[in-house]
Amino acid sequence: MKDEEWESDCMGGTTRRDFLRLLSAGAATVAWPALSRAAGAAPRPLVFILAGQSNMVGAGKELEDELRKLPPNVEFHSRGKGDGTKREQFMKRFGPEATFAQAISHAFPDRRIVLVKHAKGGTSLLAWAPDWDPEVADRTKNRDAGPLYAPLMALVKKAVGDRDVEYGAVLWMQGERDAGFPAAAKEYGRHFAALIARFRKDLNAPDLPFIYGQVNPPPAYKGRDAVRAAQAATEEAISHTKMVQTDGLSKWQDNLHYDSEGQLELGRRFAKAYLELVGRSGE
Image 1: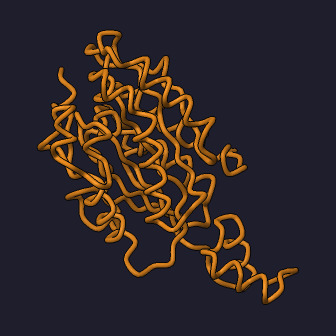
Image 2 (image 1 turned 135 degrees about the vertical axis):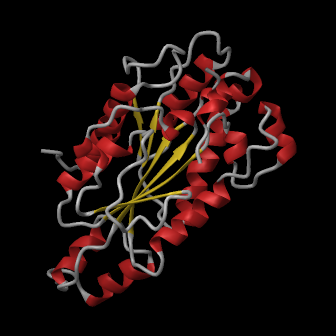
């Protein structure tokens, strides 16, 4: 099945000068929660952005009722799926969000967890470019696929509202489209670095964790090795990034899209990567 078919829509010990310096700098994600709790305030909601193409959209179909229900401290926002604050269940066709939500809820039981998901099948980095250009996107036959970054950020803004939040991480599963176009694959690393930088700038979070799955499409995708190499190099070149291995995840017969168990395991791997990156245990 073609990729495009899977589209979806206390200051304790801290001086006043130090506190003001942290506040003016945007309050580093590690320091601010400690200050908030010491001052008697509730921890800020922890926001995760899930984006990419079809393997983030998800082709999982067999989800147990326990996983379909949102954990008590989790809200889920996705295009066309309401405000995310009700006890609605995850979509019938799911991606990594189901097991990721369970693991993060368990790790942060006292935090409000906000998941914001916007993904679209068959899309390259050129369609996700913050400065989207249809002529450029047409290099991967994505002229009509974008822009995607602006709607994602609008969804994030709507989900957050006027709340003071902490951005936990961007979870990214994408690259198969670029792997199908060797010229685009060669430029993947440069475009990927620009996207990560733009997320961090627009969210005012310079150290925002960026966690992504390494693609493993069939060998027929001529740019496959170039994209995989660029993704591996990104983890070494850009701080606070972490690549999740996807080799071994089970797939449907198309050998491209992860099946139900593959998606469940992908969500677990994303959660494990995040907890390792921030120095927390999932136990």
